[in-house]
Image (tube, helix red, strand yellow):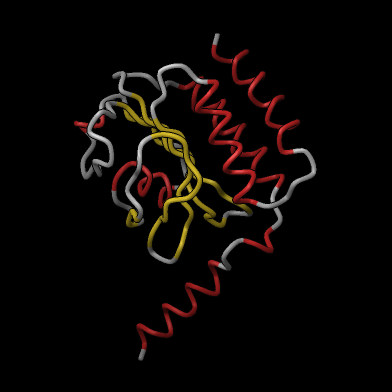
Length: 171
């Protein structure tokens, strides 16, 4: 059953991350653990918030799109809505961005730290209807463990980026 599988993944993740606080290193190990542990997943990885885009981060699977605009596609929707998005059939999702033509269903979980968008955890499957509420709850728990492990020193200051973009738009 999925809840038990996610409990095992979360326990493994706690041990795997240990005392490491580097976000990129921990995201890399998290994506590898998810890719190896979850059945019927053909891509598991992260997009990191950079200005008005999500930029490809650590992942497991086929090569992927490098930049996704905030608000576009499944990941962009999760990012701007600050909520997880489950898509049973990506061909019916308005504005879906095709990075892998084999992907049929997708789930995207925003990574939020004190309300600030850090990035998105994204999983794809070649199986329709692969992801459900158990996956959402499990992956939100995985995201919480990852976020609790990181040091903000290595992450972009999104407030500073936004102020810079606002200043540029005013000039």
